[in-house]
Length: 286
Image (cartoon, rainbow, N blue to C red; front, top):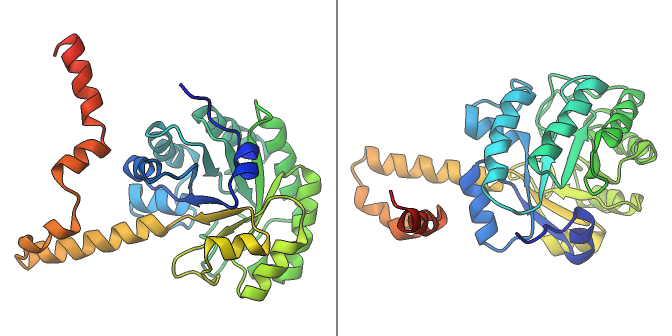
């Protein structure tokens, strides 16, 4: 097997490092086939696709990790995993980091919301005291079994303490041991520019479909100074619309309209690697 590049190697090579979000094993496989160098797994698409619930703290580590395990197993690409708040105090943060690192995470980010947390573009968020997040970051950094595992701190303070408060938190989180930073939900292009220039560590920007942050191109964000561009929910939102549209066609007895919206049966066999499994049958017998 080819050794995966580390996250730092990817950051040095990819300008910017573009990270589509996978919500299941099939989407992760398609991301790999599309030629991306890495991808991310966010809590929002996993709980939405796997459990059909909103991202408001209804699922904990065991439930979300079950979905993430299936996704990571589908591809050998480096992956950034959303660890939410770490699901508790420093003990839980430690367990969360070890759980995802054992699954093969190349990078992990944790956030400073209090539980029950919300999607970063929802109203009603609250953040923990900065000292508590600093403790979580130190615990997360110490929990890593490999120094190659890249640790990113996320702050949701923009919605609670304003942009200046979020930037002050970012400074403290870096000092506590975060190697990268994610300031969630800037509201304007000017705010994006301010965030991008504020820190020397690699930062990522989340291009959330229908969210609060203006949607810019990958290259525009890189020119501002963002090292990583995450499209965390784009695929799952498009999949939901496609399924809804196809179901409407089926309900209205318009099945003939569907073929042009679908991959062919042979293409689906290719995506799911049918030939590889058929070769094993041929070699060893059924």
